[in-house]
Image (cartoon, rainbow, N blue to C red):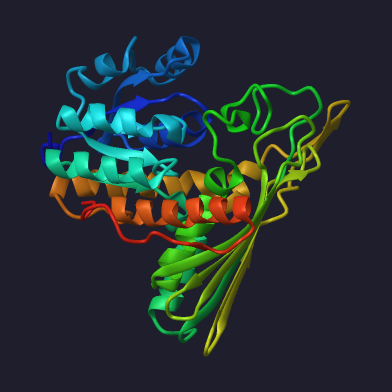
Length: 356
């Protein structure tokens, strides 16, 4: 169903975990008059209830109930990627457009199935690669598009994130969190590195050909790779390179450093140190302002939701299409294969439909 011109787009949020609470729900709340939270669902009833109470939304007992609530015109899928296909299929079957969190899917087969379902239903399927909406990378893209750096030859982005404190459950890469569960998580290459894969594709603007990669499990007792280093070769000779480390000391503020080199110039960007406010105690050091400073994520998600609303309202292609999401997955799954085999892996860049 397409939103009526001038009306707020009614949405159901599927998944009330960390990314919904920290990014999507606050963004929707800021877009009053343009987007409206109607219902929320999570298999964790307590999480769904907390989100519903905080944002004044109906708390659904099932996915179907959330999507069929009167006034719902679109779904915002915030579950782990293992459940994206199920949610997109249910939404498309009801004629609802979808903003789907990254990574689009854990496999190319599921990504292609999602694209086919959205196309058959004639609905928008946008993938939430939030970094395309951060001011930092928008400025980089503008410089590249304006020809300021010439032909892009190398893009490098490294990430540093803290490991959980000893005994801490329910945090990334712990056994109590889905990212540490091999049944639901491919590892850092999809959880984190998918951001870099999409940035490379977007800024280089060529076809990814092959990937070499190394993965490691750095968390004691862990079984899912939380460290990855990978390098992507493109058909125009450009290279994208990244290292994602989730083993920095507890309390360390997440940190990103970016470099782009072209034939006539370069662009460099890095995070603030995130230490404007520092709180230390027996449990270690934390920087409560760090998350807001890193990539200015709150503004990025507001822009992302505005773009989604505009696409649904006007029937225009979303700025991050399902094909874009699939291409990032193609790079990530090739990296996972390369890390597993110790050999360069080909990127299956072709596939899917138009991915409106």
